[in-house]
Length: 313
Image (cartoon, rainbow, N blue to C red; front, side, top):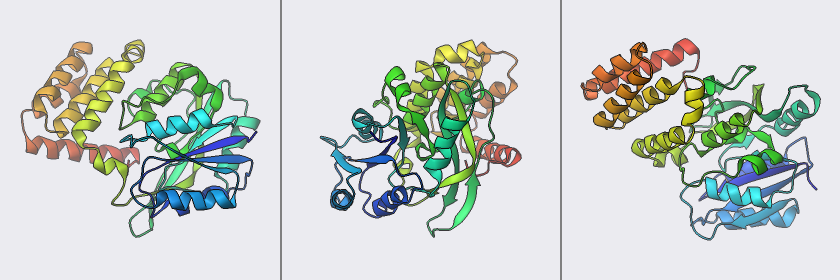
């Protein structure tokens, strides 16, 4: 049995699937299997994947019965067929650096972190001209909550290595979610008490290009998905007294998505949850200002990220 099962969901990825698969082949750790799940692509993605399968028996081709419209379903197919002790996800347009798996597996096998469940890493951000314009990195923290309730601590699925047994416990990915289904899974893993650890260096390349999936998910759908995730995990927000944060974030997102009434409702819910949380009062007032308010919020977010040293995410 392979030590690590690598799962790549692929849809119309003819332009980059070869680069992505080759990055797995170049790994310094070689005890892996690669499951590439074709989500009914309409280009020649299938042919390119199958050509790799003919050359290396560790690579397996799978496919969905119909296009799923998101990455959860093909990932679940990969998980069900995975034979490894560990599972690693790789998006079809990203590229791992050669020591990615080796360095992450070393953390699992050599660290004394109690109940370690997920090891992730930083990323190099690559623009459409194939230039590295920024680096995403995270500092390790002793606990996942409550910071995880503010935002997803993991930049991309391509950064993750986790124990297969955890998925058997918490269940597969929620196929109802088209955007941030990974965040929903990380929350469920954290709720079970597993620890997260970040290798503090970029071990993969994240490519920005015109076909990025998130570009095709409109902001309104993103907010709906985030509200669905919030409702599913509201018990955790209540437990850590972060209910006001969850409502506040939805208030901001709904306003930016052009739904001022839903925005105001969430800001009011945030105020009810914590009357002393001043930003919700500001958000409620701004929600009446239209596009001027949108510019104000975007400007505040921009400066907040600069202050936090996280300009690009």
